[in-house]
Length: 219
View 1 (cartoon, one colour):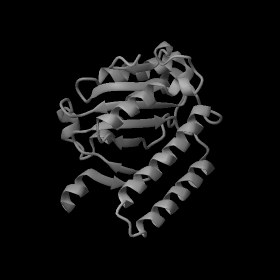
View 2 (cartoon, helix red, strand yellow):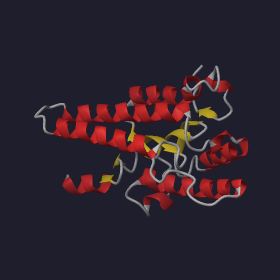
View 3 (cartoon, rainbow, N blue to C red):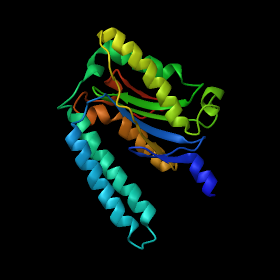
View 4 (cartoon, rainbow, N blue to C red):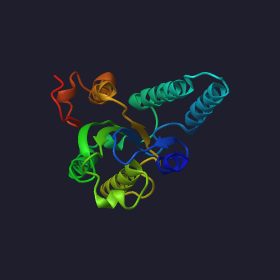
């Protein structure tokens, strides 16, 4: 069991649990899209809460930690939706088109694409790797979502920087990834993703927004 956990869990700045075959909710954002001081503050608060929870001899430790991480994800996402600092290159339709085309290009080979929303400074994405995770992902990484995102972000950053005539980091290095546990959570997350532009005031209806996609009829 210990060896199995080592193969699917690792830490850098964020915790990642990545089974080879699973459904994933991914959020990735532009480099510099959130103030460094706010990130530092939120991460410190989250780690302090998690530390207190781990020292509490309670059977619900795992669930409470998951709830804390969801809470702070929502805090970050609300700041991103306001788009009050940092670049908003994804407002450029040509840049957004690069990302949209790259997301669809990998559908059926690296993942099954279920939904996404391309916002001015970040992207929400839902996919699964149950039947389509190809050899390029399976054979090169124990962490399939990270391998997929590394390739996707490298390509889109290269194309976007060429279009913008700039150099340097385009995407924030690390993405937020969450393994979707069941159908109820899957449905809730898909609704969250496609309605993000509505919540942010970018459109009145998710299906009127040109950079939202849903594989299913959510009307």
